[in-house]
Image (cartoon, rainbow, N blue to C red; front, side):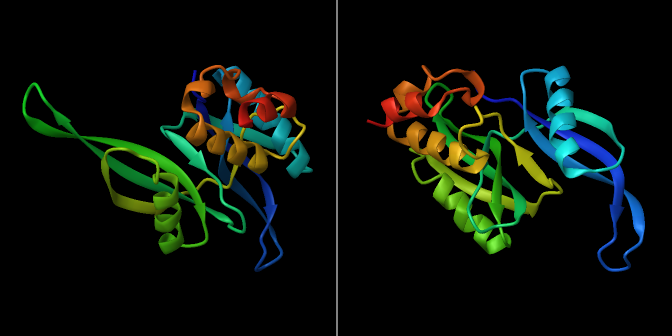
Length: 186
């Protein structure tokens, strides 16, 4: 089973960096969860460590990202629309299928380059018709807690690229520990 990402909007009081005054803001975050209930629980847990005051979860919806690709030394998230082209032998026509990637980068050019890196092992033809900055403030993947989330995602993506047949054996939602990961990397 692949990861299901939920976009959670959280409303809280924040200090404005330019004026120093407090203002109420609503920011979207992404969490990996099995259900809406788990998404609410996870975002509550994550926000308790970031926000010292009261906050309110105003909306939770399933996000339509096929993959999440974090990159080091970047601070913003971009939504990359990738159009996969496939030839339908029955009808004799080309079909395009769109998928959306959430790519971490510093600007649009770097987001394009990072999208190309993420798609480098794709067998078929593809194009990137659109890249836009996402309002997502942070991404909270599920992991066992032995490694930081970024490192866990990078290792999982490397494993998926090197041994795709083994990935189906990995426990759902990246609930594997370092020993299991080492076993698959050998």
